Image (cartoon, rainbow over all chains, first blue to last red; front, side, top):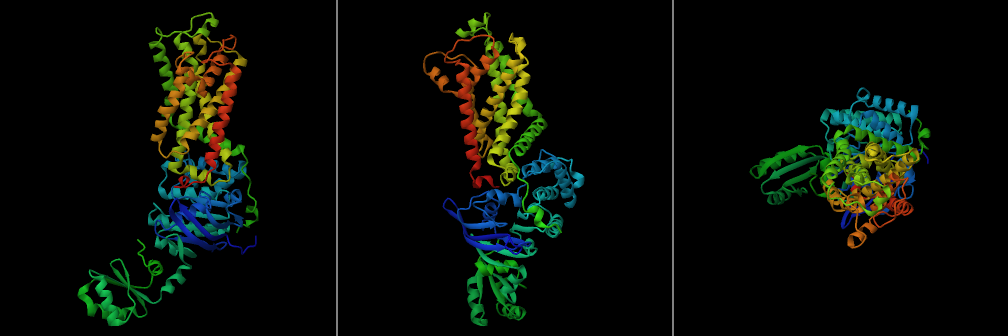
Length: 308
Length: 279
């Protein structure tokens, strides 16, 4: 495998839970060494994709390679090069931090002095070395998440999959976590794939795939995605969105997207339009915001649906 | 920066290291939950004392007891049945934790690791087996008070057979627990299947030689487990063969086949990739 080969390659992957289609023909690559985000609302298919990539779910249709190994036929190899951090901790709460990591090491064929030194280094790196003799149930959510990550890195995987890593963490702990992830990527030449439904978290990724109803509706760097929306973004709330949309289009000749009870207009020089719209239709408007496009705007533009 | 070269071919976990580590985890968890110790050993012991006292006068010793040359009390008759009940309870408690492990998330971590599904199953069964041997061993130390003397060869045979039986019953529990999402469901299976299986195995009362009950006993695999243990306890006596007390050879053979079926089913179940394994 050459250095430039993709860390993960997914081709036309489909998955259905019985009748319900969860993934609808996904095709994308994750580059070696990047932090790749899978963003989407709950039910968009990112958890299903995560479970397929982590070998918990079978590949029903399509093909995928992880670290150059075929996901369908070389599962054992994929499992060896993969580190997985689940949303709900896979730690045994009745065991100590140290015991959890020891058992994890044994499951990956590590033992003895090598295992001990890896446990020490791993806990050190994630800043939980002083808690190694404590029961996991005694640790805070943020610390548990760090132990969970130390656990999934113990066998030095080439790829780390994290499912909703910030769930249950306070903002401070979340910033810390991302600092660690970036350091780890540097130190361990790691490729990281993160699923998230948090827009701020998605901003931290090198590249982002936006999943909606089992399809990849956008894939690029967060900056490129935002600039694809173009100009400014005007969001108007109204009691009569239908009528207002027609009126604004008639008056100013702009394209108005209606999303729920909101109207959205994307264009350059949004502040002029804002002034004109408010002076003209002020009574019909309950609130109006003007801003540079966010990832939420990207989602709305690509899907015509609200993110939440 | 680490060169990925050292990561290219990670160590393979093999079979026994994962088996041992999963079994060790079971032992540690067991010892940290005092109530489990009381549940698995205390309840059978209480049954033995209470039923032994209560049924003393109404008990009719089975025909084979004449060989012993002394009166067989109910307490003594019930003795191997209680040992098997301890094994059964321990198997139930160990496998009910599969449902908890799935709920709490530990299981998914094991499932994405490179260990074979056979190692996963054997780890669980070894843990259950060791816990059974410890607890049944404590109980069997009471044998001399029953007038049953256990020689060294007999001791080895009894523990060897109990290990086999514990493996079998834990595997049976594994097969029942793996597809379930709630411990309530397991309790239902326990009272509708496992307890009747034990009650109708000759553990609690000697079955008749005719009628429907004799057929249930004949078809119940645990009948052979109880019979083998009873025969090993009376190693020096030649007990006659009957429906409730098949020969030692038959009993061991049936138990081995039953074990193979349960272990095979466990591995098949654990090998299926299913959305239930993810949380």
